[in-house]
View 1 (cartoon, rainbow, N blue to C red):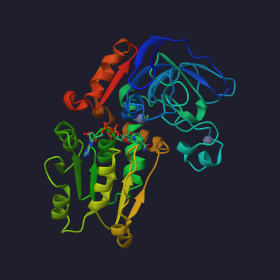
View 2 (view 1 turned 45 degrees about the vertical axis):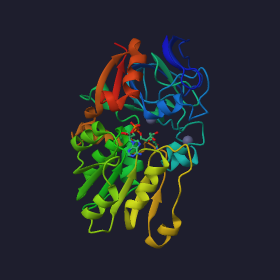
View 3 (view 1 turned 120 degrees about the vertical axis):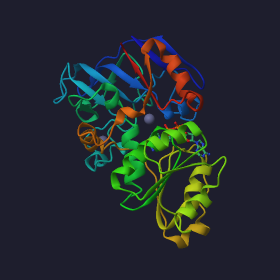
View 4 (view 1 turned 30 degrees about the vertical axis):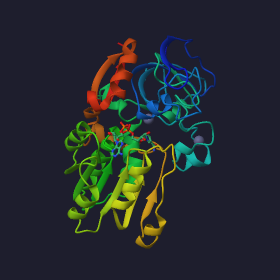
Length: 347
Ligand SMILES: NC(=O)c1ccc[n+]([C@@H]2O[C@H](COP(=O)([O-])OP(=O)(O)OC[C@H]3O[C@@H](n4cnc5c(N)ncnc54)[C@H](O)[C@@H]3O)[C@@H](O)[C@H]2O)c1
Ligand SMILES: [Zn+2]
Ligand SMILES: [Zn+2]
C-alpha cells in the first residue's frame, strides 16, 4: 500500500510500504476513506516531536471502512464505516475509567502517527478498536465526520470546556487556526456576550468572523489589551483561550484576563513561557492545560447529526491520496492558500 512516511525533520515521502496486519486481538485494520493533516503534523516535520522516528507513517485523524478485526473486538465489524479518533483508549486503565483517554496508561493515548504508524495511508491498524473508533452516523459525510477526529474535540474540551465558557461571557481566542475556530464554534453554544478572535493572519481573522467572532484583532497591527479593555470596562476577558503554542500568546492570554477569569491553554508548546505570578497571584486567575481526551465525541456526534454544528465548514481543500505532497504544501502555506482543513480521499 501507499503511505505518507516521515524520514526525519523536513523529510517526508508518499511511498510504497507493507500493508498493516493484526497484531493484537483487540486491533482492527481499517481502509482509510478520508484523512486530513493537523498542525501537529507540521510540528513533527519541523522536528519538534522527537518521539516520532524515521520511517513512521504520520496522521492521527481518519474516517474509514473496517476491513478486518481481531478475535477480541466485539462492537466493530468488517464493512462498518467508522471515525478513527486521534486518541486511542485501552478502556480499562485508571485514566480511561475516568474518561481521561488522552492519559491512557494501557498503551493508548496519542499513539497514531506518533508512537505507532498513523492514518495518512491506504490502511491503518487501530489498536483497542472497540474504544478508539465510533460508528459513522447515517447521513453525515465522511469529511464532516472527519472533523470530529481531533479539531472539534480539542477546541471544545481543552478550550471551551476547560475555560468554562458561560452565558454572557467575554471570550478571547488567541490563534484562529482550525483549533481556535473550533473553540469559537463551540463557545457559541454557551451564548457568550462577545467573542474576540486574535491572529496575525488576516485570512484566518476573516474565517474567525465566519465562525462567530464578533470582534477580530490583528495583533501585528492593533493592541489587543486596549481593545479588550475597551470592551470590558477595563476589567479584561472572562475567558482567554490560547490556540497557538508560542510563549507570547500564552503571556498575552494572561495579560487579557479579568480577576477571577480563566485562561485555557490549548497550544502545544516547544519552549518555556513566562508565568507572571507576580501579577497574577492576587487576581484569582485559573489556568488550565490539556491534551484532548476525546470524551466529548459522543456529544459532538449528536450536535452534528442534529445540525447544531456544521463541521464541514472547516474543509477548504480536497485532494486524492496520490496528491498527498501537494496537500501538505497547501496546508503548510495556510496564510497564502486560505487552507483550514484539507481532506485527502482514497478515490
Ligand atoms: N492540546 C491538544 O490536545 C492539542 C491538539 C491538537 C492541536 N493542538 C495545538 O493547538 C495549536 C493550534 O492548532 P492549529 O491546528 O489551529 O494550528 P495553526 O498553525 O493552523 O493555527 C495557529 C494560528 O495562530 C496564528 N499565530 C501564530 N503566531 C501568532 C501570534 N504571535 N499571535 C497571534 N496569532 C498567531 C497563526 O496565524 C494561525 O492562524 C497548535 O499548537 C497545535 O499543535 C493542541
Ligand atoms: Zn492533531
Ligand atoms: Zn487506558
